[in-house]
Amino acid sequence: MRRRRRIKYIGYVRMTVAALLIISVILMFDSLRRHASQKKGTDGLTVTINDTADEEVIDAGITPSDTESSVEEIPYEKKEIDNDAFRPVVKLKADLGMGDLIMVNKENPCRFPDISAELVSAASGIGTDKAYKVSYNTIQLQKVAVENFSNMMTDFYSVFSDGDVTVVGGFVSYAEQNANYKPVGDVPFVSSEDQLSPGYSDHHTGLALDLKLVSSSGSISAYDGTGNYKWINDNCYKYGFVVRYPFGKDEITGVAGYPAHLRYVGVPHSYIMHDNGFTLEEYMNEMKKYIFGYEHMYYSVYGYDYEIYFVPAEAEETVVAVPKKDDYSVSGNNSDGFVVTVCRKADGETWQPTPAAVTEAAVIEQAVPETAAEEVVTAPDAAAAADAVTQAAAPLD
Image (cartoon, rainbow, N blue to C red; front, side):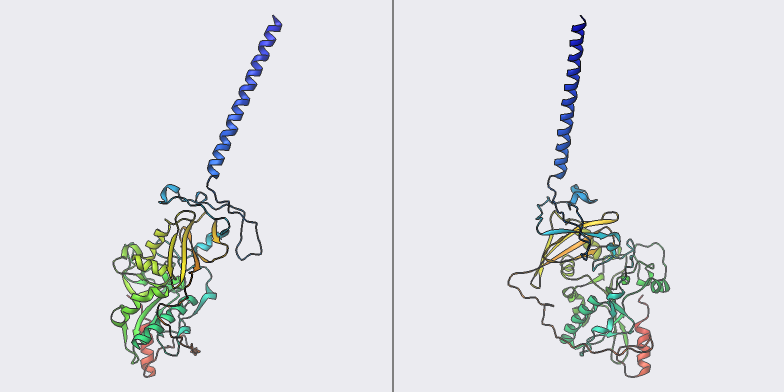
């Protein structure tokens, strides 16, 4: 009797152990299945940490699932990524505020990165043809903006022989914006740049400039982008510029239509914005459809093929996929992600810096006046010059 009970007990134990083993195996396979499901479609984009590189490279796979964006929000199917073509680099939260595509507006204050090394005198691009003027020698812009503005004005001058266009606004610091600030309260959009709160002006980027017209006689008039100057507003996209505050987009940009305010965003982005009638806000929103690993944006211009895609930002560090061999740039949008622009030479094409033949104007050395208020514009006499400076630099209402 005891033996039967013992055998029966052992049987129960064996059945229990067998059941536990079966359950363990089932759980293990389920775990493997779920892990495989999560891993399916990952790009395996991993490289070894290299502390000597210009940008920190880490061991991390780059997939859209690693970002905050939901796959359901992306209207494209995931594409297989060539691991041999891309490598990951790390961008910090502060890097969101750096690049040609940063968007400073009422919702996105400037992060004020140190761009002092990039700032040059707006007058440094004036060539022997004197295709444009600058109201104050202290006005500064980022070098890339000055170079491309100079190219545009050289072409404009070759067509119209008109040198009246005058740069009256460039980089503005927080302190300068604070000194000129004229608060108007909570409104859908402001009618003057002086009504933008300190830290929220497009001029903080060093990529934006304001224009007026100063004749050789010293007379001042507003720049409205009409007449001969319509050529500038119609063609500025070919040189990397856009009209930052177009008419009819007031509530989108937060600033009333203002044709005298140009903003450098670079090629091919200026072309894409022009072709689609996008403001910078609309373009940055559109870019969020082109997440890395899904559908990318493509554009060809000037003998180059461009591939453009968006990488949503993580909390502190964001892994961004960049090409291993091709030229590329990474720009923050000053909000929630990074735009990668890949540039490849098109077969059989020759690079042209502008769509028309560019006059290679020699850049003359600019004399730096001792007083900050001394003007670069040409005027018939000292009194007219002083009056031109005062009026050209007046706040733009």
